[in-house]
Image (cartoon, rainbow, N blue to C red; front, side):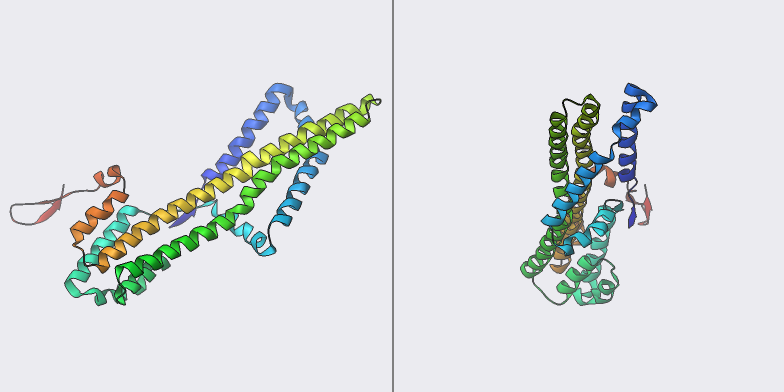
Length: 272
């Protein structure tokens, strides 16, 4: 299930508030305007955009907004429920045969899990299924890597353009040493471009790239659980043995919270 990841905007807002408070506490509200300079902003953002446009083809840049959107969405994948699904499929396959899972497999919404189960039902052996599914995971990882490269490179370019802006400001300042009125504005350009470049890199682009990388790792983990579950069902593994194999992917605390089934003397089952 996909949900809004509130931590991403909270991080942006919290970082901005901390910086604003730091500026105001040191210089007052009136001094905050000293940290706003359009020339410095345009040098950093203009140079950053130019570098990104040169580095990537149009098709990659067009994907950037949709990739950015993923940083604000979290996928809730419950390993515990996934394990229970495979235990149920394994039990059904052992009782009624692997072909009996065809209807259930076609109703599964996850395309990766659906494909793996259909391969197993079609009679593919373990080695071929694992090869196909691992190739799917590798292709997904590569797609995700290409998607976040725009933000990783932007995180590298932003501080560099901040330094370029600093050099521009210093050159202008040195050329106007005879004019005291120009020293302040030129020094502001020199320092604020470095500030803007560092802020963009360390509060925007690098955190977004890190968030996207973490989401990729989480998705790979879930798909690896699916692969092991598919192989277990395909090989006709005992449901209890399959559960024992897959439960290691879930935290111990998560499973300890589950109600345990206890048999009464009469043979009925109730939850403890």
